[in-house]
Image (tube, rainbow, N blue to C red; front, side, top):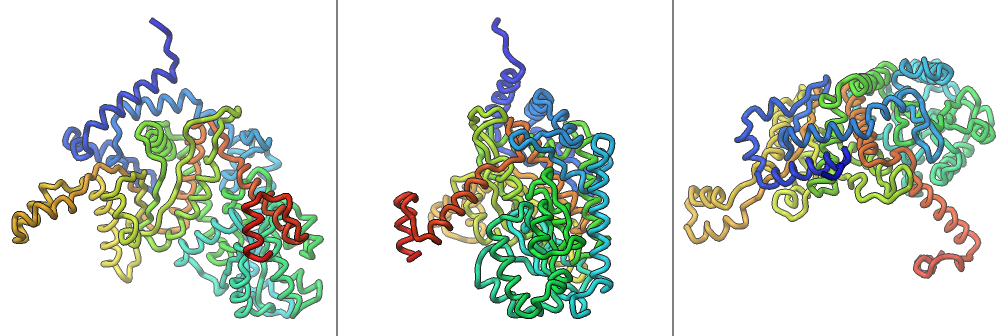
Amino acid sequence: MPHISIEQRLHNSLLDAAQDLQKLHLVELFQLQPTRAEIYQLNIAPIYLDYSKQRINQQALDSLVELAEHKQLSQARDAMFHGEKINHTEQRAVLHTALRNSQRLSSHAPDIAEEINQTKQRMLSFVDKILNQTLRGFTDKPITDVISIGIGGSFFGPKMLQSALVEYQTSNINVHYLANIDGAQIKQLLAKLNPATTLVIVASKSWTTIETQVNANAVMTWFKGKFPEQAAIEKHWVALTAKPELAQAYGIAPEYIFPLWDFVGGRYSVWSAIGLPLALSIGSKAFDELLAGAASMDEHFCQAPLNQNMPVLLALIGYWQQVYLGYNNLMVLPYSHGLKSLPAYLQQLDMESNGKSVNAIGDPIATSGPILWGAEGTNCQHSFMQLLHQGKQQAMIDFIVPAKGETLYPEHHKMMIANCLGQAQALMQGKTEQQAFDELIASNMPTEQAKALAKHKAMPGNTGSNTLVLESLTPYSVGALLALYEHKIFCQGILFGINSFDQWGVELGKQLGNQLMNAITTKNSSQLDPSTQALLKHINL
Protein backbone atom coordinates (compact mmCIF):
# COMPACT_ATOMS: atom_id res chain seq x y z
CA MET A 1 0.00 0.00 0.00
CA PRO A 2 1.57 3.35 -1.00
CA HIS A 3 2.60 5.73 1.78
CA ILE A 4 0.23 8.68 2.28
CA SER A 5 1.59 11.86 3.85
CA ILE A 6 -0.08 13.36 6.89
CA GLU A 7 -1.22 16.33 4.86
CA GLN A 8 -2.73 14.11 2.14
CA ARG A 9 -4.49 11.96 4.74
CA LEU A 10 -6.01 15.05 6.35
CA HIS A 11 -6.95 16.45 2.96
CA ASN A 12 -8.75 13.22 2.09
CA SER A 13 -10.57 13.25 5.43
CA LEU A 14 -11.70 16.84 4.88
CA LEU A 15 -12.84 16.06 1.33
CA ASP A 16 -14.91 13.16 2.65
CA ALA A 17 -16.45 15.36 5.36
CA ALA A 18 -17.25 18.08 2.81
CA GLN A 19 -18.94 15.56 0.50
CA ASP A 20 -21.02 14.17 3.37
CA LEU A 21 -22.06 17.61 4.56
CA GLN A 22 -22.98 18.81 1.07
CA LYS A 23 -25.73 16.16 1.08
CA LEU A 24 -27.32 17.61 4.22
CA HIS A 25 -29.19 20.85 4.81
CA LEU A 26 -28.16 22.80 7.90
CA VAL A 27 -31.62 22.25 9.34
CA GLU A 28 -30.99 18.50 9.08
CA LEU A 29 -27.71 18.86 10.98
CA PHE A 30 -29.63 20.28 13.94
CA GLN A 31 -32.20 17.50 13.65
CA LEU A 32 -29.46 14.86 13.68
CA GLN A 33 -27.62 16.60 16.53
CA PRO A 34 -30.12 18.32 18.86
CA THR A 35 -27.34 19.52 21.20
CA ARG A 36 -25.42 21.13 18.35
CA ALA A 37 -25.83 24.68 19.71
CA GLU A 38 -24.27 23.57 23.01
CA ILE A 39 -21.34 21.79 21.35
CA TYR A 40 -20.30 24.31 18.72
CA GLN A 41 -19.89 27.41 20.87
CA LEU A 42 -17.15 29.03 22.91
CA ASN A 43 -17.45 31.66 25.61
CA ILE A 44 -14.26 33.63 26.25
CA ALA A 45 -15.27 36.79 28.08
CA PRO A 46 -16.12 39.32 26.80
CA ILE A 47 -16.97 37.44 23.56
CA TYR A 48 -19.31 34.51 22.97
CA LEU A 49 -18.92 32.63 19.68
CA ASP A 50 -21.71 30.50 18.22
CA TYR A 51 -20.57 28.51 15.21
CA SER A 52 -23.30 25.86 15.36
CA LYS A 53 -24.82 27.22 12.13
CA GLN A 54 -21.69 26.37 10.18
CA ARG A 55 -21.80 23.43 7.80
CA ILE A 56 -19.19 21.50 9.72
CA ASN A 57 -18.99 18.32 11.80
CA GLN A 58 -16.63 16.78 14.32
CA GLN A 59 -14.70 14.85 11.69
CA ALA A 60 -13.92 18.06 9.85
CA LEU A 61 -13.04 19.95 13.03
CA ASP A 62 -10.74 17.20 14.29
CA SER A 63 -8.95 17.02 10.95
CA LEU A 64 -8.62 20.81 10.79
CA VAL A 65 -7.11 20.93 14.29
CA GLU A 66 -4.68 18.17 13.34
CA LEU A 67 -3.80 20.12 10.20
CA ALA A 68 -3.02 23.19 12.34
CA GLU A 69 -0.79 21.04 14.52
CA HIS A 70 0.92 19.59 11.46
CA LYS A 71 1.58 23.10 10.13
CA GLN A 72 3.08 23.97 13.55
CA LEU A 73 0.67 26.78 14.22
CA SER A 74 1.49 26.86 17.95
CA GLN A 75 5.20 27.12 17.26
CA ALA A 76 4.61 29.95 14.76
CA ARG A 77 2.46 31.77 17.33
CA ASP A 78 5.16 31.48 19.99
CA ALA A 79 7.81 32.68 17.54
CA MET A 80 5.73 35.81 16.90
CA PHE A 81 5.24 36.60 20.58
CA HIS A 82 8.93 36.01 21.34
CA GLY A 83 10.13 38.48 18.73
CA GLU A 84 11.56 36.14 16.10
CA LYS A 85 11.76 37.62 12.59
CA ILE A 86 8.73 35.83 11.17
CA ASN A 87 8.30 38.52 8.49
CA HIS A 88 11.13 36.92 6.56
CA THR A 89 10.81 38.93 3.33
CA GLU A 90 11.57 42.14 5.25
CA GLN A 91 13.64 40.50 8.01
CA ARG A 92 11.43 41.93 10.72
CA ALA A 93 9.90 40.75 13.96
CA VAL A 94 6.12 41.15 14.39
CA LEU A 95 5.47 42.65 17.82
CA HIS A 96 2.15 44.47 17.82
CA THR A 97 1.06 42.19 20.67
CA ALA A 98 3.84 43.59 22.87
CA LEU A 99 2.26 47.04 22.60
CA ARG A 100 -0.61 45.92 24.82
CA ASN A 101 1.43 43.66 27.11
CA SER A 102 5.20 43.40 26.83
CA GLN A 103 5.57 40.76 29.54
CA ARG A 104 6.02 37.82 27.13
CA LEU A 105 8.66 39.76 25.25
CA SER A 106 10.60 40.97 28.28
CA SER A 107 12.59 37.75 28.74
CA HIS A 108 13.47 37.54 25.03
CA ALA A 109 14.06 41.21 24.17
CA PRO A 110 14.10 43.25 27.40
CA ASP A 111 15.41 46.43 25.73
CA ILE A 112 12.54 46.49 23.23
CA ALA A 113 10.00 45.74 25.95
CA GLU A 114 11.34 48.62 28.04
CA GLU A 115 11.23 51.04 25.09
CA ILE A 116 7.62 50.07 24.40
CA ASN A 117 6.64 50.66 28.03
CA GLN A 118 8.43 54.01 28.23
CA THR A 119 6.81 55.22 25.00
CA LYS A 120 3.36 54.21 26.23
CA GLN A 121 3.88 56.01 29.55
CA ARG A 122 5.16 59.14 27.80
CA MET A 123 2.25 59.15 25.37
CA LEU A 124 -0.42 58.72 28.04
CA SER A 125 1.26 61.39 30.19
CA PHE A 126 1.08 63.71 27.16
CA VAL A 127 -2.62 62.87 26.81
CA ASP A 128 -3.30 63.67 30.45
CA LYS A 129 -1.47 67.01 30.21
CA ILE A 130 -3.42 68.06 27.11
CA LEU A 131 -6.72 67.04 28.68
CA ASN A 132 -6.07 68.73 32.04
CA GLN A 133 -4.78 71.78 30.11
CA THR A 134 -1.31 71.69 31.62
CA LEU A 135 -0.03 71.66 28.04
CA ARG A 136 -1.50 74.51 26.05
CA GLY A 137 -1.02 76.16 22.71
CA PHE A 138 1.37 78.95 21.70
CA THR A 139 -1.02 81.66 22.91
CA ASP A 140 -1.70 79.80 26.16
CA LYS A 141 -5.15 78.75 25.03
CA PRO A 142 -6.23 75.13 25.71
CA ILE A 143 -6.40 72.69 22.82
CA THR A 144 -9.96 72.19 21.55
CA ASP A 145 -9.36 70.41 18.22
CA VAL A 146 -6.96 67.79 16.87
CA ILE A 147 -6.18 67.18 13.21
CA SER A 148 -4.82 63.67 12.71
CA ILE A 149 -3.04 63.34 9.37
CA GLY A 150 -2.26 59.82 8.17
CA ILE A 151 -3.46 57.11 5.81
CA GLY A 152 -3.94 53.34 5.83
CA GLY A 153 -3.14 51.87 9.22
CA SER A 154 -2.42 55.34 10.57
CA PHE A 155 -6.03 56.28 9.85
CA PHE A 156 -8.37 53.26 9.82
CA GLY A 157 -7.74 52.07 13.38
CA PRO A 158 -8.10 55.32 15.35
CA LYS A 159 -11.00 56.51 13.18
CA MET A 160 -12.90 53.24 13.53
CA LEU A 161 -12.34 53.09 17.29
CA GLN A 162 -13.34 56.70 17.76
CA SER A 163 -16.72 55.81 16.28
CA ALA A 164 -16.99 52.58 18.29
CA LEU A 165 -16.13 54.27 21.59
CA VAL A 166 -17.93 57.56 21.16
CA GLU A 167 -19.76 56.96 24.44
CA TYR A 168 -16.38 57.03 26.19
CA GLN A 169 -15.35 60.43 24.87
CA THR A 170 -14.62 62.24 28.11
CA SER A 171 -12.79 65.27 26.78
CA ASN A 172 -14.01 68.40 25.03
CA ILE A 173 -11.51 67.83 22.26
CA ASN A 174 -12.82 67.24 18.75
CA VAL A 175 -10.65 64.93 16.64
CA HIS A 176 -10.68 65.34 12.85
CA TYR A 177 -9.01 62.87 10.47
CA LEU A 178 -7.31 63.74 7.19
CA ALA A 179 -6.39 60.72 5.07
CA ASN A 180 -7.38 61.13 1.44
CA ILE A 181 -5.80 63.79 -0.74
CA ASP A 182 -9.00 65.64 -1.46
CA GLY A 183 -8.62 69.40 -1.39
CA ALA A 184 -12.35 69.89 -0.73
CA GLN A 185 -12.11 68.02 2.57
CA ILE A 186 -9.12 70.07 3.74
CA LYS A 187 -10.80 73.34 2.76
CA GLN A 188 -13.97 72.48 4.67
CA LEU A 189 -12.07 71.32 7.75
CA LEU A 190 -9.64 74.22 8.06
CA ALA A 191 -12.41 76.79 7.51
CA LYS A 192 -13.97 75.87 10.86
CA LEU A 193 -10.79 75.55 12.97
CA ASN A 194 -8.68 78.03 14.90
CA PRO A 195 -4.91 77.44 14.67
CA ALA A 196 -4.49 78.83 18.20
CA THR A 197 -6.45 75.93 19.68
CA THR A 198 -5.57 73.17 17.21
CA LEU A 199 -3.07 70.35 17.70
CA VAL A 200 -1.83 68.71 14.48
CA ILE A 201 -0.68 65.08 14.60
CA VAL A 202 1.24 63.73 11.60
CA ALA A 203 1.37 59.92 11.55
CA SER A 204 3.87 58.52 9.06
CA LYS A 205 6.30 55.73 9.82
CA SER A 206 8.58 56.59 6.89
CA TRP A 207 7.80 60.33 6.83
CA THR A 208 7.65 59.97 3.04
CA THR A 209 4.08 58.72 2.43
CA ILE A 210 2.96 61.04 -0.33
CA GLU A 211 -0.67 61.53 0.74
CA THR A 212 0.36 62.33 4.31
CA GLN A 213 3.08 64.75 3.21
CA VAL A 214 0.77 66.60 0.82
CA ASN A 215 -1.89 66.99 3.53
CA ALA A 216 0.66 67.96 6.20
CA ASN A 217 2.14 70.65 3.93
CA ALA A 218 -1.31 72.08 3.23
CA VAL A 219 -2.13 72.26 6.94
CA MET A 220 1.30 73.73 7.71
CA THR A 221 0.68 76.51 5.18
CA TRP A 222 -2.64 77.25 6.89
CA PHE A 223 -1.04 77.20 10.33
CA LYS A 224 1.88 79.45 9.36
CA GLY A 225 -0.56 81.93 7.90
CA LYS A 226 -1.49 82.70 11.51
CA PHE A 227 1.63 81.61 13.41
CA PRO A 228 4.82 81.62 11.32
CA GLU A 229 7.05 81.34 14.39
CA GLN A 230 9.00 78.12 14.96
CA ALA A 231 8.05 78.29 18.64
CA ALA A 232 4.39 78.07 17.64
CA ILE A 233 4.97 74.95 15.51
CA GLU A 234 6.73 73.31 18.44
CA LYS A 235 3.64 73.85 20.61
CA HIS A 236 1.07 72.62 18.10
CA TRP A 237 2.63 69.88 15.96
CA VAL A 238 3.18 66.23 16.91
CA ALA A 239 4.90 63.49 14.91
CA LEU A 240 4.34 59.73 15.12
CA THR A 241 7.17 58.22 13.09
CA ALA A 242 10.09 55.84 12.79
CA LYS A 243 12.14 58.71 11.31
CA PRO A 244 12.42 61.27 14.13
CA GLU A 245 15.24 63.11 12.38
CA LEU A 246 12.94 63.91 9.42
CA ALA A 247 10.20 65.08 11.77
CA GLN A 248 12.66 67.38 13.55
CA ALA A 249 13.82 68.76 10.21
CA TYR A 250 10.14 69.52 9.52
CA GLY A 251 10.12 71.70 12.63
CA ILE A 252 8.58 69.40 15.22
CA ALA A 253 10.04 69.52 18.73
CA PRO A 254 11.77 66.29 19.93
CA GLU A 255 9.52 66.05 22.98
CA TYR A 256 6.48 66.06 20.63
CA ILE A 257 7.81 63.13 18.58
CA PHE A 258 6.65 59.60 19.48
CA PRO A 259 8.40 56.59 17.95
CA LEU A 260 6.98 53.94 15.67
CA TRP A 261 8.90 50.76 14.99
CA ASP A 262 9.57 48.51 12.00
CA PHE A 263 8.31 45.54 13.99
CA VAL A 264 4.75 46.94 13.96
CA GLY A 265 2.97 47.06 10.61
CA GLY A 266 0.61 49.94 9.91
CA ARG A 267 -2.52 47.79 9.99
CA TYR A 268 -1.53 46.50 13.44
CA SER A 269 -0.45 49.86 14.85
CA VAL A 270 -3.54 51.25 16.59
CA TRP A 271 -2.11 49.92 19.88
CA SER A 272 0.97 52.14 19.46
CA ALA A 273 1.39 55.91 19.42
CA ILE A 274 -0.84 55.79 16.32
CA GLY A 275 -3.63 55.61 18.89
CA LEU A 276 -2.74 59.07 20.24
CA PRO A 277 -5.70 60.91 18.62
CA LEU A 278 -8.03 58.24 19.96
CA ALA A 279 -6.51 58.52 23.44
CA LEU A 280 -6.98 62.30 23.32
CA SER A 281 -10.67 61.67 22.69
CA ILE A 282 -11.43 58.87 25.18
CA GLY A 283 -8.70 59.54 27.76
CA SER A 284 -5.76 57.48 28.98
CA LYS A 285 -7.84 55.23 31.26
CA ALA A 286 -10.15 54.05 28.47
CA PHE A 287 -7.17 53.63 26.13
CA ASP A 288 -5.52 51.42 28.74
CA GLU A 289 -8.72 49.35 28.95
CA LEU A 290 -8.64 48.93 25.16
CA LEU A 291 -5.10 47.53 25.44
CA ALA A 292 -6.15 45.30 28.34
CA GLY A 293 -8.99 43.80 26.30
CA ALA A 294 -6.62 42.99 23.45
CA ALA A 295 -4.09 41.54 25.91
CA SER A 296 -6.78 39.26 27.34
CA MET A 297 -7.38 37.79 23.88
CA ASP A 298 -3.60 37.44 23.42
CA GLU A 299 -3.45 35.42 26.63
CA HIS A 300 -6.30 33.18 25.54
CA PHE A 301 -4.68 32.69 22.11
CA CYS A 302 -1.40 31.67 23.72
CA GLN A 303 -2.82 29.40 26.43
CA ALA A 304 -5.97 27.67 25.15
CA PRO A 305 -5.75 24.31 23.35
CA LEU A 306 -6.31 24.64 19.62
CA ASN A 307 -9.76 23.02 19.68
CA GLN A 308 -10.93 25.50 22.34
CA ASN A 309 -9.09 28.53 20.98
CA MET A 310 -11.37 31.21 19.53
CA PRO A 311 -8.96 32.76 16.98
CA VAL A 312 -7.87 29.30 15.87
CA LEU A 313 -11.44 28.04 15.48
CA LEU A 314 -12.44 31.08 13.41
CA ALA A 315 -9.39 30.58 11.22
CA LEU A 316 -10.04 26.86 10.76
CA ILE A 317 -13.70 27.43 9.89
CA GLY A 318 -12.76 30.10 7.35
CA TYR A 319 -10.05 27.88 5.84
CA TRP A 320 -12.54 25.01 5.64
CA GLN A 321 -15.15 27.15 3.89
CA GLN A 322 -12.66 28.48 1.35
CA VAL A 323 -10.74 25.32 0.50
CA TYR A 324 -13.44 22.67 0.87
CA LEU A 325 -16.75 24.48 0.38
CA GLY A 326 -15.56 26.86 -2.35
CA TYR A 327 -16.32 30.26 -0.80
CA ASN A 328 -14.12 33.23 -1.71
CA ASN A 329 -15.51 36.12 0.34
CA LEU A 330 -16.21 36.98 3.97
CA MET A 331 -19.01 39.33 4.94
CA VAL A 332 -18.80 41.04 8.34
CA LEU A 333 -22.10 42.37 9.66
CA PRO A 334 -21.88 44.35 12.91
CA TYR A 335 -25.33 44.99 14.36
CA SER A 336 -24.09 48.08 16.17
CA HIS A 337 -23.88 51.62 14.85
CA GLY A 338 -20.66 52.09 16.81
CA LEU A 339 -19.02 49.31 14.81
CA LYS A 340 -20.18 50.61 11.43
CA SER A 341 -16.58 51.17 10.29
CA LEU A 342 -15.37 47.75 11.42
CA PRO A 343 -15.75 46.07 7.99
CA ALA A 344 -13.55 48.75 6.38
CA TYR A 345 -10.95 48.31 9.12
CA LEU A 346 -10.97 44.54 8.71
CA GLN A 347 -10.68 44.88 4.94
CA GLN A 348 -7.19 46.29 5.34
CA LEU A 349 -6.29 43.96 8.19
CA ASP A 350 -7.25 40.80 6.30
CA MET A 351 -6.76 41.56 2.61
CA GLU A 352 -3.48 43.43 3.02
CA SER A 353 -2.20 40.59 5.22
CA ASN A 354 -3.35 37.51 3.35
CA GLY A 355 -3.90 38.73 -0.20
CA LYS A 356 -0.94 36.74 -1.54
CA SER A 357 -0.30 34.47 -4.53
CA VAL A 358 2.83 32.65 -3.39
CA ASN A 359 3.70 30.84 -0.18
CA ALA A 360 6.52 31.63 2.22
CA ILE A 361 9.14 30.05 -0.05
CA GLY A 362 7.82 31.71 -3.19
CA ASP A 363 5.85 28.85 -4.74
CA PRO A 364 2.44 29.61 -6.32
CA ILE A 365 -0.62 28.74 -4.20
CA ALA A 366 -4.23 28.06 -5.17
CA THR A 367 -5.96 29.82 -2.27
CA SER A 368 -5.19 32.69 0.07
CA GLY A 369 -7.18 35.27 2.00
CA PRO A 370 -10.80 36.07 1.12
CA ILE A 371 -12.40 39.21 -0.22
CA LEU A 372 -13.84 40.97 2.84
CA TRP A 373 -16.85 43.27 2.82
CA GLY A 374 -19.85 44.18 4.92
CA ALA A 375 -21.92 46.91 6.50
CA GLU A 376 -23.78 47.69 9.69
CA GLY A 377 -27.09 46.07 10.46
CA THR A 378 -29.93 46.65 10.03
CA ASN A 379 -29.01 48.88 7.07
CA CYS A 380 -27.50 45.91 5.27
CA GLN A 381 -30.86 44.14 5.25
CA HIS A 382 -32.18 46.81 2.92
CA SER A 383 -29.32 46.55 0.43
CA PHE A 384 -27.33 43.39 -0.31
CA MET A 385 -28.94 40.76 1.95
CA GLN A 386 -31.45 39.96 -0.83
CA LEU A 387 -28.60 38.48 -2.88
CA LEU A 388 -27.60 36.17 -0.03
CA HIS A 389 -31.15 34.98 0.58
CA GLN A 390 -32.10 34.27 -3.04
CA GLY A 391 -29.12 35.02 -5.28
CA LYS A 392 -26.57 32.60 -6.71
CA GLN A 393 -23.56 33.99 -4.85
CA GLN A 394 -22.47 32.69 -1.45
CA ALA A 395 -20.43 34.21 1.35
CA MET A 396 -18.85 33.33 4.64
CA ILE A 397 -20.61 35.46 7.25
CA ASP A 398 -19.76 36.85 10.69
CA PHE A 399 -22.62 38.47 12.59
CA ILE A 400 -21.47 40.69 15.48
CA VAL A 401 -23.80 42.12 18.11
CA PRO A 402 -23.47 43.52 21.65
CA ALA A 403 -25.70 41.83 24.23
CA LYS A 404 -26.27 45.18 25.97
CA GLY A 405 -27.12 48.40 24.18
CA GLU A 406 -28.11 51.98 24.87
CA THR A 407 -30.04 52.00 28.15
CA LEU A 408 -32.15 55.01 27.17
CA TYR A 409 -33.67 53.09 24.25
CA PRO A 410 -33.95 49.43 25.29
CA GLU A 411 -36.60 48.58 22.70
CA HIS A 412 -34.28 49.68 19.91
CA HIS A 413 -31.61 47.27 21.06
CA LYS A 414 -34.06 44.40 21.43
CA MET A 415 -35.10 45.01 17.84
CA MET A 416 -31.46 45.12 16.76
CA ILE A 417 -30.77 41.74 18.38
CA ALA A 418 -33.97 40.26 16.92
CA ASN A 419 -32.94 41.37 13.43
CA CYS A 420 -29.38 40.08 13.79
CA LEU A 421 -30.41 36.65 15.03
CA GLY A 422 -33.35 36.59 12.62
CA GLN A 423 -31.09 37.11 9.61
CA ALA A 424 -28.74 34.33 10.72
CA GLN A 425 -31.75 32.04 11.23
CA ALA A 426 -33.29 32.93 7.86
CA LEU A 427 -30.02 32.30 6.03
CA MET A 428 -29.76 28.91 7.70
CA GLN A 429 -33.38 27.76 7.40
CA GLY A 430 -34.58 29.41 4.22
CA LYS A 431 -38.16 28.84 3.09
CA THR A 432 -39.35 26.01 0.90
CA GLU A 433 -41.73 26.54 -1.98
CA GLN A 434 -44.33 24.54 -0.05
CA GLN A 435 -43.97 26.75 3.01
CA ALA A 436 -44.36 29.85 0.85
CA PHE A 437 -47.42 28.32 -0.83
CA ASP A 438 -49.03 27.43 2.50
CA GLU A 439 -48.49 30.97 3.82
CA LEU A 440 -50.11 32.47 0.73
CA ILE A 441 -53.08 30.12 0.92
CA ALA A 442 -53.47 31.04 4.61
CA SER A 443 -53.66 34.69 3.54
CA ASN A 444 -56.65 33.77 1.30
CA MET A 445 -54.79 34.04 -2.01
CA PRO A 446 -56.32 31.98 -4.86
CA THR A 447 -54.57 28.64 -5.37
CA GLU A 448 -53.20 29.24 -8.87
CA GLN A 449 -51.90 32.67 -7.95
CA ALA A 450 -50.31 31.27 -4.76
CA LYS A 451 -48.69 28.46 -6.71
CA ALA A 452 -47.10 30.93 -9.13
CA LEU A 453 -45.96 33.40 -6.47
CA ALA A 454 -44.55 30.73 -4.15
CA LYS A 455 -41.73 30.04 -6.61
CA HIS A 456 -40.57 33.64 -6.19
CA LYS A 457 -40.83 33.61 -2.40
CA ALA A 458 -38.88 30.38 -1.86
CA MET A 459 -35.39 30.67 -0.39
CA PRO A 460 -32.87 27.80 -0.26
CA GLY A 461 -31.32 28.68 3.11
CA ASN A 462 -28.43 26.38 4.02
CA THR A 463 -26.10 29.38 4.40
CA GLY A 464 -23.83 29.08 7.42
CA SER A 465 -22.61 31.85 9.68
CA ASN A 466 -20.78 32.67 12.89
CA THR A 467 -22.39 34.87 15.51
CA LEU A 468 -20.11 36.82 17.85
CA VAL A 469 -21.84 38.34 20.87
CA LEU A 470 -19.99 41.03 22.82
CA GLU A 471 -21.03 41.60 26.42
CA SER A 472 -21.33 45.31 25.60
CA LEU A 473 -19.52 47.89 23.52
CA THR A 474 -16.65 48.90 25.81
CA PRO A 475 -12.96 49.64 25.24
CA TYR A 476 -12.14 46.24 26.77
CA SER A 477 -14.54 44.25 24.57
CA VAL A 478 -13.63 46.10 21.38
CA GLY A 479 -9.94 45.56 22.13
CA ALA A 480 -10.57 41.84 22.52
CA LEU A 481 -12.59 41.77 19.27
CA LEU A 482 -9.84 43.41 17.21
CA ALA A 483 -7.18 41.12 18.68
CA LEU A 484 -9.42 38.14 17.88
CA TYR A 485 -9.47 39.07 14.20
CA GLU A 486 -5.73 39.83 14.18
CA HIS A 487 -4.94 36.35 15.46
CA LYS A 488 -7.50 34.67 13.21
CA ILE A 489 -5.83 36.28 10.18
CA PHE A 490 -2.38 35.23 11.43
CA CYS A 491 -3.58 31.63 11.85
CA GLN A 492 -5.05 31.56 8.36
CA GLY A 493 -1.73 32.81 7.02
CA ILE A 494 -0.05 29.81 8.64
CA LEU A 495 -2.66 27.45 7.17
CA PHE A 496 -2.16 28.95 3.71
CA GLY A 497 1.61 28.88 4.20
CA ILE A 498 2.07 32.60 3.49
CA ASN A 499 3.74 35.63 5.08
CA SER A 500 0.89 37.73 6.48
CA PHE A 501 3.09 40.69 7.37
CA ASP A 502 4.46 42.09 4.11
CA GLN A 503 2.49 43.99 1.45
CA TRP A 504 4.49 44.29 -1.73
CA GLY A 505 1.37 45.01 -3.78
CA VAL A 506 0.84 48.20 -1.77
CA GLU A 507 4.46 49.17 -2.35
CA LEU A 508 4.05 48.80 -6.13
CA GLY A 509 1.07 51.14 -6.09
CA LYS A 510 3.11 53.78 -4.24
CA GLN A 511 6.00 53.37 -6.68
CA LEU A 512 3.84 53.84 -9.76
CA GLY A 513 1.98 56.73 -8.16
CA ASN A 514 5.29 58.55 -7.68
CA GLN A 515 6.25 57.86 -11.30
CA LEU A 516 2.95 59.28 -12.48
CA MET A 517 3.37 62.41 -10.36
CA ASN A 518 6.75 62.91 -12.00
CA ALA A 519 5.19 62.47 -15.45
CA ILE A 520 2.48 65.02 -14.62
CA THR A 521 4.98 67.51 -13.23
CA THR A 522 7.40 67.23 -16.17
CA LYS A 523 4.61 66.99 -18.79
CA ASN A 524 6.38 63.90 -20.14
CA SER A 525 4.23 60.78 -20.22
CA SER A 526 6.13 58.97 -22.97
CA GLN A 527 7.27 56.22 -20.60
CA LEU A 528 3.70 55.39 -19.55
CA ASP A 529 1.40 52.80 -21.11
CA PRO A 530 -0.95 54.03 -23.88
CA SER A 531 -4.09 53.79 -21.73
CA THR A 532 -2.61 55.92 -18.95
CA GLN A 533 -1.31 58.44 -21.51
CA ALA A 534 -4.82 58.71 -23.00
CA LEU A 535 -6.37 59.23 -19.56
CA LEU A 536 -3.90 62.00 -18.69
CA LYS A 537 -4.62 63.66 -22.01
CA HIS A 538 -8.38 63.49 -21.39
CA ILE A 539 -8.02 64.94 -17.88
CA ASN A 540 -5.77 67.61 -19.42
CA LEU A 541 -2.77 66.96 -17.16
